[in-house]
Image 1 (tube, rainbow over the protein chains, first blue to last red):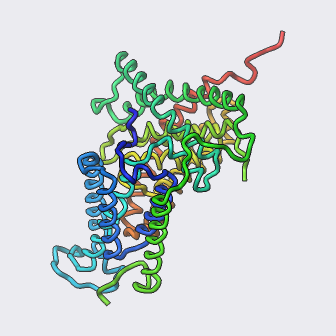
Image 2 (image 1 turned 90 degrees about the horizontal axis):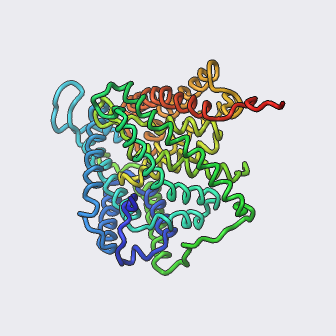
Image 3 (image 1 turned 60 degrees about the vertical axis):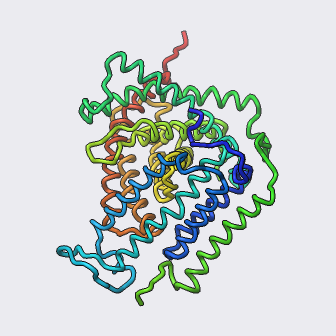
Length: 276
Length: 182
């Protein structure tokens, strides 16, 4: 239960970096990858992410479960896109180079394939970096890093509280379901949908009411210690930036700038269009 | 900007933690494959009527972002933002429902449900698809149909789970005139 966010502690330069720098890099990276539809750029990001993985000493088998999950998600999304809109590529790129005609409006065009390639590359360019962040950042450092990048410390503290109480609430939920099952409440597929929702609510009521009480207790304790009196606060897990940290943040910035520059000067828009 | 009280901060934190636990571990399989019934929106509706729109907004954002982080499928900003907005709109009913001072029954249940249905419709059938189109350039008909399905299932879930939670919360609260002077 302690390993909720799949944090894997290994000695590597990526682990030694501060959470704040990694968070900045992650955000800039994901905005850069999000805004671009240039397969060459997205593929370069993917290669870069794989290199970072090598440096971080995280192995594929550590994250294979999550990768599998993401793969299914990605394929399903692509399938849905094709089923709903087989001409989406043509709409975006403005031309139609048909390769294979199936039936009715369902055909396969080069444009559609390029669009799907872009969608898949978007996953490949962003997922590894998110996984890298999750596996190499200690959750308790995460809140301190939020404050570092300019989020107000009260909100950062709320995140810290959430991370602190997730294991407690999980344990409580587990206890409650066990005691309800002992009394014969059915939560599995055997019950009908409405009954399942009702019995889920029965589990939720004690869980949520006790959590509501907990809010009172914690806020009283914090008020007694004068939380929120000052404009700033210090963090136990705070660390100074090192050269690696500056490197990561500059890397993120460069990625975002390249993405913007590609759109502005090379592709004249978000899409790389080889058809015109 | 609104000044947060200590209680608001704690409510955001605990709300996000509950949202996370319900969204991540309490999966109730639905008849449609690969979708789960998200009871966390029932919880979010309770947080919204008790603590108001701002707390529900931030709770939804943090909770959903943590769920995405922990699943490792990347962060879907379009849906994270939507969770916050849904919480925020449901929170606008706070003054009308007034669960802190009045018993949650009759007309107040209707008001609560009207707000949550509007919130789910605006969130899942408008905001999420539009963001999906703007950010990820996905085909419009696909995201709108996905969005309508999500709106309907979340509205039904909130109507059942959220209403039950609010009734239970209201019943557990001491009544306003429960103490009398002799």
